Length: 357
Image (cartoon, rainbow, N blue to C red; front, side, top):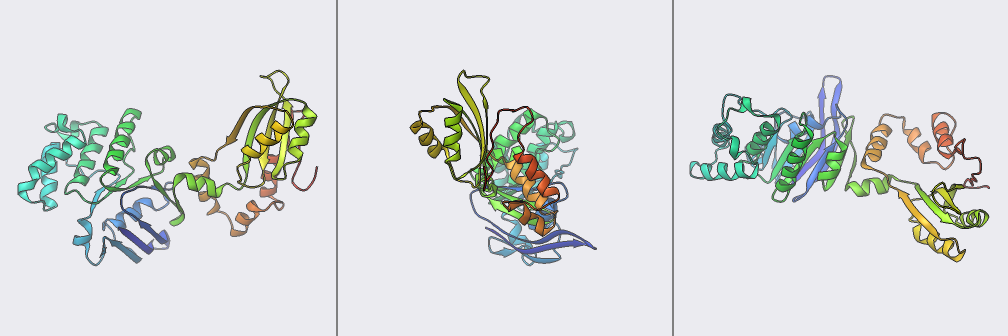
């Protein structure tokens, strides 16, 4: 549907978008995620034909946006971060004007505008001046404009910026509904918003694409260790023996449980991303040490976002150091040491590091 190849945009010596390549397929909601200044809006402006590119290609439904802009733009509905509204018009007047600009046949305009106002829930304010509407309603009018002509692709740049919590929920619900009939590209730097709405995530940092996958897959692929907490009933020495017998457990801590009599709280780390729950359950069951609680610490989209965007600002050899089993000296070693350090108040804890007791 949309193919972007080696897209670059430079402003003098500043590179806003740097050799960007990705594909948008039909029928999904894509989250275009990145910190402020990452190049999200610049990329969207190039996709929609608002600005040109320094180099690279953008193809929309087989049409080059720079060579055949009119044909390519027919497939796109666009809501910029600042909606292009005429404040002295009513929503109905504005949509009628936008329909004329989009060359929608006169015979189809009235019914189309009516249907889109119903979808975006602005019928009750259609005869009020746009300047008197709330920020949430203004966003709805902007989205209604993007839907005119029923384009296959809807591009929304920061659609919930400046809205109150109730308005944010309403706009998110509206985007989900739009996603049932259109392919949606949603630009945002709000991680919870992308996680709640999007089927697929594209993360951009410093103008470069650093990740492209489903939200769950991003966190799964990035995680190279697993952290887990348990409460186990039984003898402390036996619990320690079971943990020492698990080759994939790289470190663990044991302390007396404050909640369960005769039980011990265990925190452990695994050296890889394998799911250890079944193995641990069977091992403790064989040792007659029942597990009262087991919880795996999940990596959030926020964790993935921070890791991906931070890596792009560090030297290349630093990224390799982070993945090494024994970090080099310096900042990485300090962080690794803090992660493995036994808390000071846990005087009865036992730890086993990978490669030694």
